[in-house]
Image (cartoon, rainbow, N blue to C red):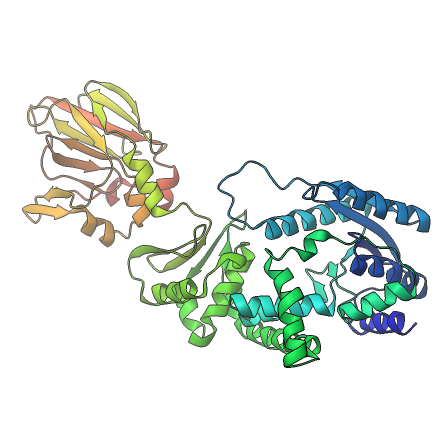
Length: 482
């Protein structure tokens, strides 16, 4: 009764479960989860909530089906609704960088949420204990912890996940299951020391308990509580700035102004970025040194550029705005573009630009359509073949205003065209002379004069992705020396 009362008090004081709630219990069959099943079964009649059980079979162990059958049998014995799911973690993706533990966790929670939604359970309870909390805190200290990660396992998370047993240590759990003759299954993978958590549980904590602090679990639990309180204070002070961060529809890219970042106190900029990164689902893979470098990059950024925060995450600066998200790596974009051969324009006709949505129409004579980027070339000065290619470092275009060649890079910077857009703009070339960069600039040479044979190049579909950065096409925005 002491254990039952202790858990009840924890549930009530943390407002985890209320009368008429429907709680889905995540039960693996191990001692912690079977204790959860029995404790919540008894408390359901005291507090007045309903319970159901979900068991997720990861198919990692050959005999995992026995766990499934055991949990189902116990639920049938108690008359508790049972919902089983099989999940398969191996999809043949050799580039998958997530650990087996992380992947299993993500799939497990997705399955639990799916079951809860389907059958009307508003809460999901897991069997995490004070011992799990201690292991988690130590693991995060070992691998590099922030205030956020030192908060450990929360009793209530995402307005749906509850951990009623966080008040109990593993020794208390084992005493409870033995005293009540509760059956359970021992998961042999819990003794496999190739996993960091198991090494912490089996080696490190007993070593600390014996030689340094017999109450290490209580000490780490208090540390987690303090870290959580500090974290709440930090994010409360950041709320105004965080509310100015914009996310795309898929919540994969976050955008905020550099001025917003400058408003964040320097000692809190780390937490500002961590919250954003967490919101796009990437906080588990961020190296602390990389995060510091990203902060320095944003502070010093001018014009446009990028910094790789991780193998999957890029920070881009584009003329006053910072973008963080799952965006293609710039070097990969360049590598992809290098794979496209320049387009040889040898005759009148239509040409598809393979690295963008833009199409080129080549016509005899003067056919100006000011709705689209165009250039009229004198065939007496330049004639077929022409070439369409992408930007190269060192590219120059002739300006009659300056009466000399001007670097395209300088023009791009002046017009605040982001780096990734520069890399995909089609460039019209003849005899190694750049004549036209659609939407940006016409050369001061090659213009058709009265009496010349003329040819018109018109670029269509310019309302595509490029236009978002160059702005709506307007003939007056094209640089040209009249």
